[in-house]
Length: 190
Ligand code: URA
Image (cartoon, rainbow, N blue to C red):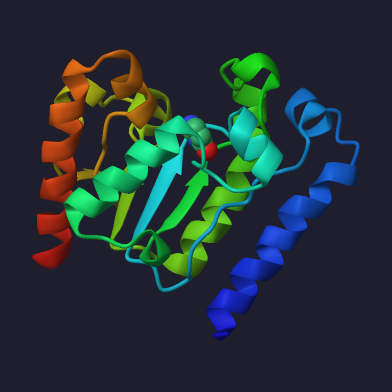
């Protein structure tokens, strides 16, 4: 294990250990476990969803449910192996009944994501969906920014629609596939 992987794993353990911290935030206290994220420190891309759902809460791993299956397909379209990317969420704990995370909850968890990004230093950060995008580029619209590189606050973003959105709106699937192919090309052209 490289030194950076060891730092990333120590941080993951710190996030998991937060479960017993009694911090007073509802998401941290009601979740089954916190879900730090998975992937190597050498990842060139970091994929960021909003928060774990029920399957992720049970498994302790991000994107293992239906949206995760589609994410796997999209990574295949991009020519990227899941083991080569780091996948995480803005908020590391499942909000009750999958409600949207509240701003103070995002602020409470944000330093962990900052630290993960500081260790990994990815070439591209891929926010999934409008909520995750808004955390990195508050003025950007997912309908305009998806599928291309966007520089925001010193970061290179490559926003994608959230795969869960395509489960409800089948028309988005073709867009997501095309965007994933463009992501693969952007990564290869680096
Ligand atoms: N949706 C997300 O945003 N994150 C997950 O981990 C799973 C579903």
